[in-house]
Length: 564
Image (cartoon, rainbow, N blue to C red):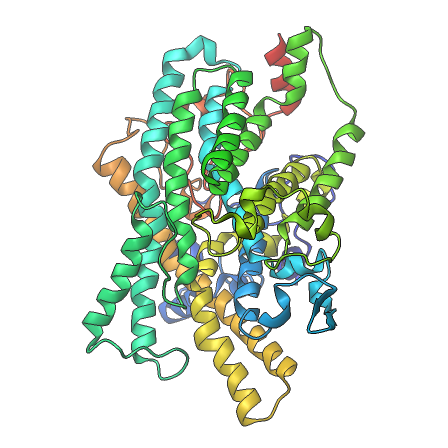
């Protein structure tokens, strides 16, 4: 019961930003997933393997696994946001077919002389089905993840005393991230493509596709769909993907954003923090102005948030006037609360034009003409440009606001959200199958065969489909997702030799990607030996942070050193 209570409680009562989770990382050496999953005290091999088959969300609260969630740091909440965002995307995909007549329209819209006033249409409430806005959140978080490790090195207070070492570490980090990114992103996607091909060809319910004369031609069709996503040179809108695979369009965008981010990191590495922020903001604005590249703007916004972790605007003003500036807590808390609320509102922007509904009608007047329906401006997104314009702004504002609110960070770091963040990449990939082969078939059987009402049948299909998605994602995460993390590291470090040094930290340590600690909040101090040992960049996961550093540095101490 104590394990179960800690799982539900999820965070301590500490008011410090550097709090710790009730489920800390174990310090035991990992020999294999088998070893750290199954309690060593259970000697019966059959029992051990049966316990291995239990999903983590069941095994851990019952004390049937020695594996633990990562220790909580002040950036763990971003992982929780990622998990919530994946769940919201699932909500949109499973509701859009059943309630398309109103879920994409704002509350109070008139249609055929009748007002649409459903609860889910209300501002803020409709954020629960605002999948497009959550895609913007994904891309902002990706910009944060991809730049964090490098910006930490660049902003290290002791960098001037070890310029050559820092430069070598930075080049190694960028090389490692660039080479591993494709394996990390597209490996699980390819596995999903082939799993989906077999399911849609042989499973006798859900969406069945027998257009191909045999399974091999069917597999080849899914391979071609995957190649379309993996093409880094294709910046135009992707052609339609299979309905149970269509969410994968974002992965191609993620990969191209990765390449753009690595170029930005290398380009701005030698600039001052003011110069770096200026370039980041300029590139974001220019990409939006020239070609409506809202995705680039999102990634640049994430990089700016990461830079602000190490060098806030108040530090820039302090250097400008040559005097310390320490803004009051209320000067960050109040704007932070406002930005979170306003950001959620913008991220939940309806896909239909406002048509007089507030508060969107007033904001609609501020939408640039090139982002409106009659702009005839090409873009890679699947719906109207105004959704992405406001979603980009909303995602950045929301995440900046959360950076100022430690209490909300704690709430978003509870154990369940941490777990959802761990499996979120698998959850995102598998949601198509969860909808087409579990949730939707249950809905149709209950409504058509047993006469259930539409709402009751949908609720049953939604609950069962979501449970299936979580359990299937747990297995996909452990068996496939983590395997490609290890494969990427083996290829880049062991085979290609990037960052491999004698005496460097073992990648089979507890800090490895199998059981990882999220990225720290602050740059290490000048005498931090762990910084010297870090020769390989963050595991640039598009869903979570996979760095193995401990968040034990004092932010105020680092800022004090910077002003000395």
